[in-house]
Image 1: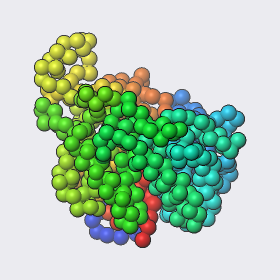
Image 2 (image 1 turned 30 degrees about the horizontal axis):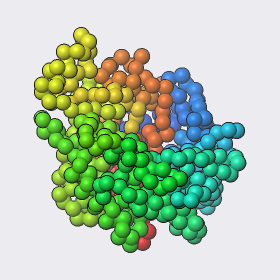
Image 3 (image 1 turned 90 degrees about the vertical axis):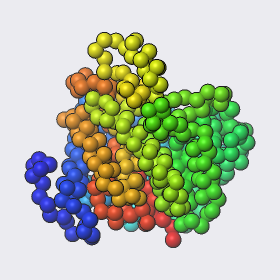
Image 4 (image 1 turned 180 degrees about the vertical axis):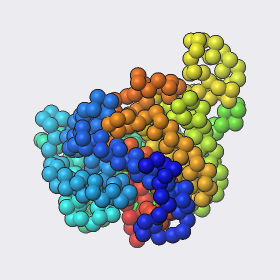
Length: 487
């Protein structure tokens, strides 16, 4: 059945009248896309970590924890894909989260947000004690990473040997994006140890000496507790979700921990002062300060496109209307990074140049190339699209905060581009070059678990009534897993 033939008959689970016929059709189209991605995973990668959709094969990239399956649990539940959810949950019973292939090192950060977060998110919606038991098993396996003098965890854990893998350097995203998951685990199990691990790591980062009060260098030494002075300042890779969890810890605790609110306000003001710039043609963007802090990089990462959504959420929760204005400006920039390419997909990194720089740059681009900086001085730097969710995350939050339907339109356009350029027979594949429209040679043989956990979930929620995973009841972790706000 084509999109246009979908019947308008909202199921009983929709409890208010705001769901229009168009939104329902779009929501169901996203649901069908999820079924397609899940079918490919089930057929070619069942029980494995990731589907490789181009070669119709699989990998054990994340330690043989069936991470796509675990990361997708609450997505399947939210979308009422009950048969798929039941089958996935039954498989979870067989997973040993205290084991991994011999010699494999489990990544603390990734398995906290994907495995622990995925199990806890499903438990919040389902209340099946088995899911909580499995979440506790993950928490216990990962807890060895916190056995350090500074409280800063190590990057990896050997779950077979029940020991940490010593590392002297950890990025702040890895050490500072564990707090929602371990604090939620503490709440639902009654075991405060988990919260103490995460809180100790959080305070070690906060107490480390730094030059700018609200900005944190991307790396910190887990042996000494000192920041790496050569590390850049940004809200992109290595740092992004650390900033996110200031506000989200405040929300998770129901506003009962004012220190997190203060840290969020301080950091957002510092980001605005030091990292937010406007291009010559009027695009507001977030760049980064290089290690020496003497130079500024005029590039924005797709990963940083979560930040306007964070500002919008902060504007809503903390009554900061000035931040909503900035959030909408930044969201326009992130969306334009999609519309400026022939595929309608946004690049991994994009940059900004003056008109003079554009003219000089474009002289040296090979004839016939579409990879040029446009008249607005905006162009792709890393042309990959790896099915990332951050722009859609921002559009979802902005729609929930403002009610402006343009964010639904923008999200729908991105979904159509994904359908056209990333969909393959066995699922969805990353795109090597968003400036190229030659799909036969342009796919990346990877469907990351976050495509199901985040990208498709945010799209589905964008077209759902606002009481489906209400932002008054839930806070979403950085992998889009819903945790009930502690009352």
